[in-house]
Length: 87
Image (cartoon, rainbow, N blue to C red; front, side, top):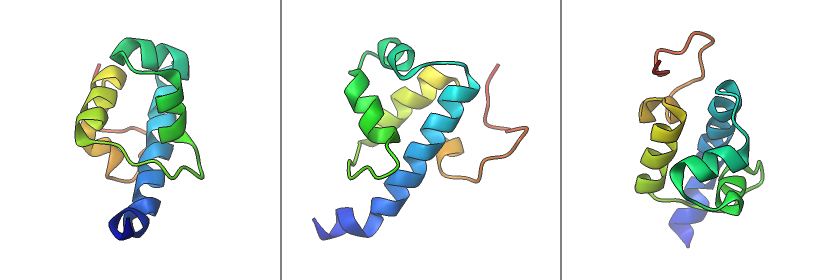
């Protein structure tokens, strides 16, 4: 539990980036959830600004694949012309 609290801000930051790239792709939470075969509530919890939800690296890879972004996009600053976006 201590580790989770220690890194909680990092999970929240990644969640904000998931929301950013999802919106950039023009997808709703429902569409992304369907695309990667997870529940809408799970996506919602990951993206929530005050989330206290952790998630696996596997989940992050799934989200990155669904959004067509490199997983590194979630760990680096958001750039206007992001080099992490895939066509």
